[in-house]
Length: 278
Image 1 (cartoon, rainbow, N blue to C red):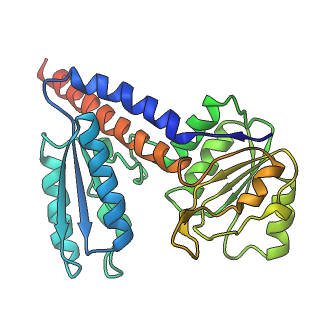
Image 2: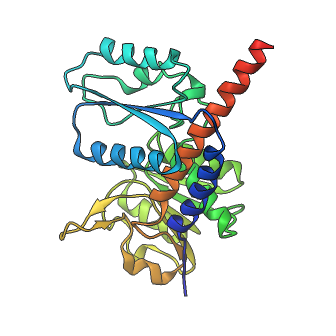
């Protein structure tokens, strides 16, 4: 019987430990989230992050900018937060309106405050890939010498996940929107681990999965009844040796890792500040 990789359970444990640590602090960590416009999905994600911060004692700010904000206006806010010593982590919530260049604006966030891990010089690994690897480690799943197939090549999940897997001595194949269908199916059927990160319901089904594969589902979609579901059809679970559910798999791990990054960012900044004052 396949093992359910319970990200919600592990994330709850991590958050409990983090709360205990924050409770001992005189000055609490602070996360600032900047949104531009009113993308519905972004509003949900931001609300969840703010709620998670509150639950473990991290203070937060939500700076809401109108959709028509210029790059200069957004950059000005980010520069202000970058210089504010009471703010330890900064998130520029994606996606941005089309007239704004996310990578250029992201560069305004100091690497030590880039708790999402999206900047090339960030002190942190992107939260979702880090959460995935931590969940695999919790269940003693070793990717070394295994063939790992990633669906999706985003800078947020797919590419940094590939790098982490290579660091752990996996053999990695990446499929994307220009990968021929037959090639994708052939790779999936050979994969020891499948990581689906595209946000496309049922892109992986039971016929794509070899028996005993590990299925990691990062996708978030809605079925015809409005119920949350992932990229991988649940019928594929029976052929796997282990799988992550949606919801309750990778999503909670991503949030837990983000919270840890905010706390680490504060510790790093305070350590640097103390060193400069001595």
